Image (cartoon, rainbow, N blue to C red; front, side, top):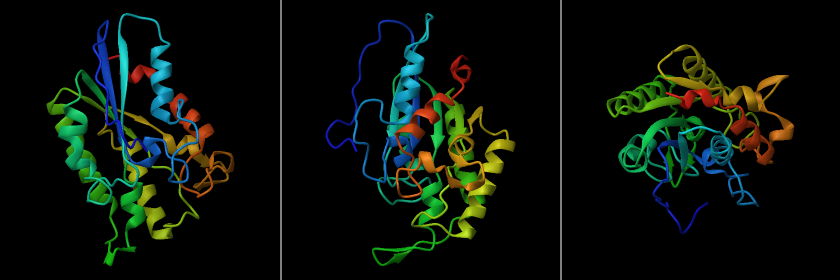
Length: 231
């Protein structure tokens, strides 16, 4: 949803920690897969950046949005997979201190679907977990802390199946209980319907049962504990 400008690098006026948000359209800021109608604080990384900017203290923070709509964690689909984007989109960013990973729902969703004549295999929770562990290991080698985001609900979306819901639930249980990440953000807990955790809240739905709306992006950004970035 940013068709011209890839990135802007500036010289900070005081010590700055950089947080990269690695993900798909839900990180990029898409609504119904097409992008928000407003370009002001349109996604949850923008909300996080605003909250950090409003803090007092000697340390400043920059938030770099590395979300690509339709991106996968493991395989090529739209853009290189997250695993292959680490060097260019994450580790090459100056001042990098923290990485937030919210990716994997597309890997689950495209499984079993035939796209451009190719039927994509179903992805297993174990495959996604191995990918997360690779990201964590590589980031730790760079002295970067990694924060994992739980995968959002997607019942009744165009690529929903009960088998895929089981995979999403397993991945989220591992994220919450596995203690592999340096911290977590329970995005699913923010977005899910209290009566049905597999379903996006009606007031947070952009219309396709998958992409959050602007109210949801605001809630996601506000749900992030800023203490995650203090060390």
